[in-house]
Image (cartoon, rainbow, N blue to C red; front, side, top):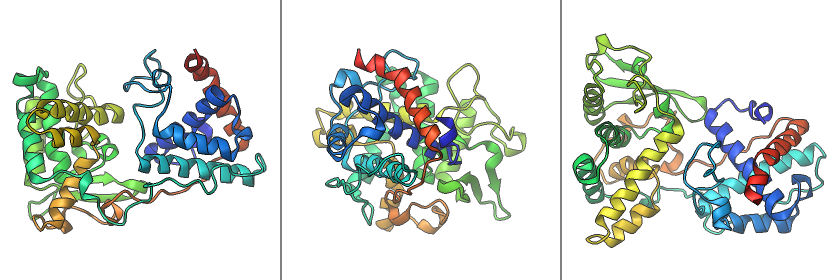
Length: 349
């Protein structure tokens, strides 16, 4: 499988393509008893419905766990219309290539539509937080240790993620790869972070006072030097809670931290704020990136200092799906065999 993924240099793209291909392969074998080459348009339509509500739930849905865990499942829950459209777009690209290679005669995903799955041309404000909602969430975050039993280092990291993430608008993959060596201060005393953005583009993102203060506070909490002249360049900006504070956190773990917090916050305010509690349950960590552009549109922030063109989301919404071809027919076949051999027996049990 790694062979046909290696065409895509971005680790995030590789993970996404691997995930969608493996999900389809497993579903085809376990639920339909077919190989990829045997899938029909009827199968593709059935798979679209399956993605919205993977079932049986016990077989397909579970918490985030390592692949080696008995609790691992291909899905963490039902997919939104946009996520379904994303998945089908990737699979459509796969089958277009397979048609070109004459491995299959037709693309079963051609023409499959997803209601509500079109990319918006402007930011959907319903998928972001208002100032009042954000203030309430931040207040809950301030009391995680005393009111909700979080370990002090975990609570400190969560608060840093909230403040730094909102102030910079960086994606999870960009945060994971960021180190203190990527932080720069120009002649005017303004702070910047060099990141590799979407598509492998290099850019500099401004670190406004909120981000800079959050970083200094978080470094002090990790017992690391606050002064830039004493920094170790390879120190991750976001630390792991494992063993020593110099370790980095994985992208999967990073995504799970705010997810856990959103669920906790929803339960905490359920009685007093039912609508907001429901919104938090629907929310994903990506919504926090939308909070900055929403404040920008309301006139609260000068957006030009926050969104360099190489890192800014197009139209302040989810960027269009880029369709790539996969590598070789032999690698596709090998990937299918490996996935089925490793996972299908457990899911079918």
